Image (tube, rainbow, N blue to C red; front, side, top):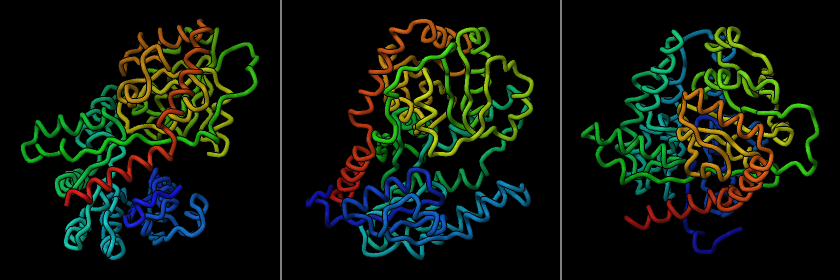
Length: 396
């Protein structure tokens, strides 16, 4: 739907990949405020995710470089080079007679001064916690397993921190993520103003695609499902240990690619009752969630996982952590259960409670669906984003 009060607003979205940038561009396009979308995806691939007519500028050679490294491991990790190159691409194609540049973190730095010279406002999209916080948390967690965390390149961290400083606003998806920016700002004198720049805008979910199973599930054991990268960041080691002793009443399905550095650890864990599914096609995810009874995502660090919203929209009670943005979307014992990250005992008790109490499970399932219907559709996300951009422009 189009709002006549926003027709004069023009926005460029610049994302080196896809993430939720395509959902943002889609919504802005339908409201008549998208000037263009910049991406590394080839136009033919981007068209699969976008409506016809979206104005595109693409840098597919950068996506090819990323995919080649991910598949072969040949050469150095290209993240920094891609970020710099895409920022240069944005310098050439994002600047113009538009109001706002929404650029993804680490790949926008060089375009910021040019945008400001052109009278544009710049919003940095950061889909996770503050990059320094993220690095600290994951480095510590990897050390617990004798692994070396492949830390973010120091220059990427420096780039992002410069972007945070130079941008007019920083968009994050949860209050937890926002708090990591405020905390880091208190520790770093040059970042004291970051808290005033934050836009907290939780993501959305397709409420038609993800919906509760209309048929009751009949089987011998409950199905607990996890969706995400199977590794340390998402809390899988602690989930596996918490699941021990529950295989008599439930199965645990791990859906998602297994992180390379986690494969050996996974092979050494107790996998009784655990089904390692690997990645599933995105078109099949809604069916997978409808086939589950409980959703669990015990992350150590997150932005706002779309899988959490998708599970709730599918009518699943959830067990998750504050670090996954839980407090923004659910109440403890309302739509699910919130446990401290890395707390095996608390996670075990939460999974057992939901496994054994069918009344509570069904009540939370209904509440979960009702919660996402109240402000967590993609339309809601776009409305909040446009309101924030409008306010930013009107400040000048």
